[in-house]
Length: 217
Image (cartoon, rainbow, N blue to C red; front, side, top):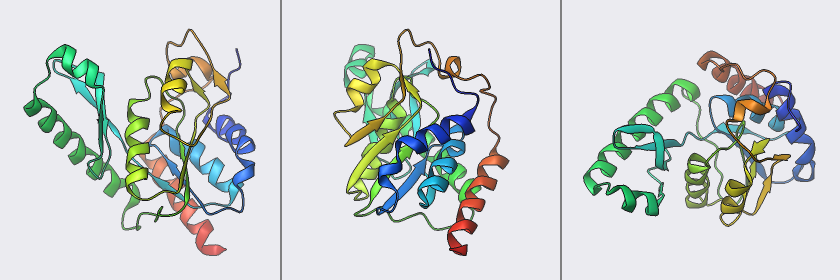
């Protein structure tokens, strides 16, 4: 089983697999917090702008860790309809839970972006980067949001994911780059030597560095 030293190593390996997009009309969208470390390395190698998208999972009633769907900052929501029906989740609960997550997303965006304008993705190839996928719920919301914002093509780039998630997500995107597709899949961290938590300050610093680099060009 292939593993990565840390998120920087994973980001550099992803960047090598994405070289065909260098020089094209692209935007790298990273999912905080861990995905921003990888996204920075990808954007650096491809000489592309870096921005964030913050999807949040919608947890099941009484079990917030169990995702029944996810939502993005613009309200784009994807649900696992089968699970929602099976659990008998009410429309009222879904609306409340969705609104709560959007409030949290907006709080984080202000914190991470400060006053920077979001990148315009209309008509561009969008590369969505994260440090791995398990169920893919939040990634599906990110993909749907980018479609709504007018991306011409969507490429998902993650170092690791289970085969079922790759199979499902491939229906919704133009391409998936995932060096390690592995089963049994217990947690993203099993594929990293160092999977320590990324702090907010590091996310802010990397986004600022990426913006300065773009302005200096």
